[in-house]
Structures are given as C-alpha cells and as structure tokens.
Length: 428
Length: 166
Image 1 (cartoon, rainbow over the protein chains, first blue to last red):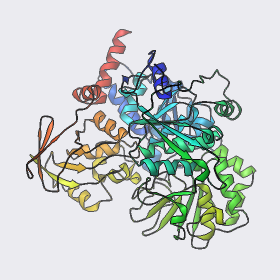
Image 2 (image 1 turned 90 degrees about the vertical axis):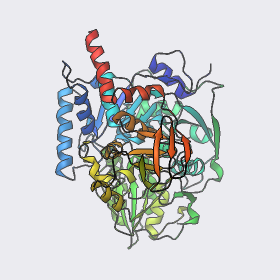
Image 3 (image 1 turned 120 degrees about the vertical axis):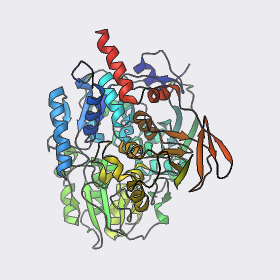
Image 4 (image 1 turned 180 degrees about the horizontal axis):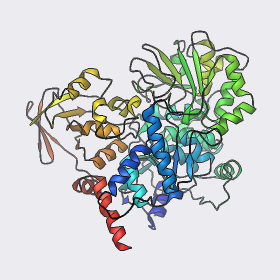
C-alpha cells in the first residue's frame, strides 16, 4: 500500500511495515525539544517517578535538546529561577544539546535545531512548542506537545497515542514575483483553508516553487502550518535538503532520504499559483483573516517587528536590509529586529545588515521569542498597531488585548517601516 | 445539572485562555488565577468562586488553538469546569486528557448563557430548551489515559513495568 510521507515516517519509527491514516501508533522519538517550559516538564517528570524505587533518569540524554529563548536574558527573578532549575537538571542528566543564553551558541529553538544539524529527514521530533512543525521542512515528522506529554517522552522515549494523520497535499507551482516570498505562500494557504482547515492533518508541500525554495523558506511554510491546525507540515527531502544538512548544518551521517510513495492516499489537494501571488497580510485578530496587502495599505503602524522563528533568518534580514538601507524608519514608527540565532546575528553583522538597520533608526535586539508572545520586550500600548513578521495575531498576543497585530513578510514590514503605514513593497 | 457560565465563539486560542505574559507561572496549583485573564469580568468571577463545580464553558470550533502551553488546560482544571466545544485543537485536547480535564466534543451543541445542561451518558441534555446533543466518544487510548487518572499515573505504570523487566 503506497504511503504518504507522514505514514512512512511513523511506520519506521513505530517499527511497523506500514501504517495508514487513522492508525494509532507509538513511535520512538528521535529528538525531544523544550525551551523554558522545561521547568514544567521536569516538575511533571519527577512526579512520574514519585513512589517508584528509582531515581528519575531521562531515557536518552543525547536525544533531548533544551534551548533558552522565550525570555532571554531573564526578565524576572521567577524566570531566572526556572532557568536555573533547568540548567541544574541538564547538568545532572548529562543533556549535551543545551543552548544557554550565550552569543556563541544561543538562539530561537526553531532555528537552533536545523542550524546545528539536530533534525534529520525521517526523524520523529516532538517539542513543547506548537511551532515544532517548523522541522518538517527537513523531511521530519515534527509536532508540538504539552509539558506532561514531554515528561512521558523523557521517561519512555516514545510518543504515546499518536494517530497517523490524513494528509493534505499542497501543490505550489510557478515563480514568486519580486517582493513575494514563502510567508505570502503560507498566509495565502491559511486564509483559504482557515484556522482549523488542517486540524489533525499533515500538510505535505509539493510543486516547482517548493523545489526551488531554500530550506530557510521551507522552514517558514512548515512553521506556520500549525496556524491552519496541522499536526505537521512537511517537505519531502530532496537535493536542497541534502545541501543544507551537509553544507550548512555540517551533518556527515548517512541521511534517510525517503519521500512519499507514488499513488499515496491524500485526503485532498490544495493548489497555489505562485506566479499570480501578491504580498499578503493577516489582519487582527486571527491568522486566517488574510487579505492582499493592497486592501489594507495606508493603515498607520506604531511598531514594526522583523524576526522570530518564522522570519528571522539571514535571507529575511537581507531582504529587509536591502529595502531600508540608506532610508529611515518613519518618525511615528519604531522598528525592532530579532535575528533568529546568534550565528545569524553575527553573519548579519559581518554583512552590514545590522548597521543598515540601526542607521535607519531600527533597534536590533538579541535573538529571542519574547516580543512575539508578549512576555519580554517590545510590548504594545493601548490602541497601538503592530506589523510583524511573526506567526500569531490573536487578541492579546503581543502582551496587550487593546492592541492590533498584523502579520506579513519581511519585505512588507521593511517597506511599511519607511512610510510608517502598511505599504506594498512593490511601490517603494 | 449545571449552568452555562459563558459562551465563547470559534478559534478561542490559548492566548485567550492563558495569556503568554503569565507563562512563567507553570504549576497547576498556581495557574487558575490567570484563567481568561484578559476577559476581566469572567476572570474576576472565576477567582471569586462564583460558579459551582461542574459549570459549563461552551465554545465553537477549534477551542484551544495556538500555543502548546499546558497552562491553558491546568488553568481551567483548577476551576472544576466542564468544557463543551464543537471541536478542539489537537494539542489542547491532548493536554486536557493528560491532566484529566473533562472535555466534551459536541459538534451540534446549541446553548445560551444561563441554560441548564446535564450530562446523560453519551448525550448532553439542555434542560432549558429541551434539546439533546450527541457527544463524540474519545479514542480508546485517550480514554485509557483518563481511566488511569491522567498521563502521569499512566506513564508511572509503564515505567514500573520497565523497571520490573530489568
């Protein structure tokens, strides 16, 4: 029976010859990622061992990754204490894939995992973060779980209770126009299929546009797949996947390069014509409230945010810097830039992008998630409008239920910074 | 028999249920104070314990979408509420099952604030309107976790078996 990529990976990880959508399996976990919420995971992990005649030991410390990114450096003593507990636990258990608050190793978890070669095609990756879907860009089955579920994974090494998802095939063909990028593709898809359009489903990305995309862009597609409710978003591994893992992530191990089988059973097919796609924007207060940017042009913006696990990679910063270089951020607007990792920060520094941003009036921040979810830096005032390259715009998302958040690409964000209002980058 | 305390729409995200700025608070014993923190009246009423145990929150499609934060499940659990929705987002549903928060998947639910609801086996009865709605059963493995008293107890048994097999 031909299998989708999701079915194939789950069969491999569960030790079965095949699986089909609807089966409930218990796959072995290849990589288990947490960030600051490891504080709750380790609390629950110790609860599991209560009353047992054994010290709590994780099943395999080499398969656990912990990255501090949500509140870095700590914004409160509470966070600092949580981070200290996690740091102590990492030492006790011998967890080597630990990325502390450091300029030589730190960053946002969804950039660190690919950048350091922790994710491979065919892996089952779980993370206590909903945007763990990001890692499907490298051909893995990667999904978000809660803290107690992760505690169970730390104890057992497998993910309980996983229902093999039905797969929606997304075919994107054609060439994206100048100033149109992966962010516009995924916003467009979410706008069409809606916030629960892929609930409990896998999205499998195909087509010439995807084949020609860099891994960096594919990570954007898979990152935001969860905003349509998808369990996972996946790009079948190909030449580009191999190039990224070998040349950028410096992975030397053999790679499992399986794609879906011909004749695999897809629930349905969604198609996107890249040639005719215009810059998109998600309007308040849901990610699926998507319009072409031309429909909201002129809306005044108080704060522009470029960065995050969605759009904080080097090509995103390059695109934004190219637009804003030698120009100025509008007087009424402030602009914050969050590179996705310290390696990206330093590469952007070497290429002069950070100077371009600062010269234009933007503030370059340290890599981290805090602003996107309203927990650390860049909070919004009452009645203010944010235009952001992040991935969520729910009411209250950026720390204030009386603010509005619009979501867009780095190109739209940079062009809008110059005019202080929502702007089509094709017009700047 | 308990009342519907509030009616919520579609796509209620975990940012609504438990805003991100309270995420440094993680323990299930401490999260209930921030339940629906940005819906100030509801939050105040919950904190004042104005609702009897077993009261109903009724929502539309995709309840609990967004972040994987488990606080969104533990914060409701601390108020001993029943959650009824037309559908639930995947991670939220799993978190709720793992912590033992009762979720009722009721695709056709029709109720207003103040209506009296009663759980009758696999049906939800709206005493105020006289209508009855089918509740979708949980998949067997999820039910097994609930029967075990939550995922911690369920996994503890698995660890026990692993230790015994050594």
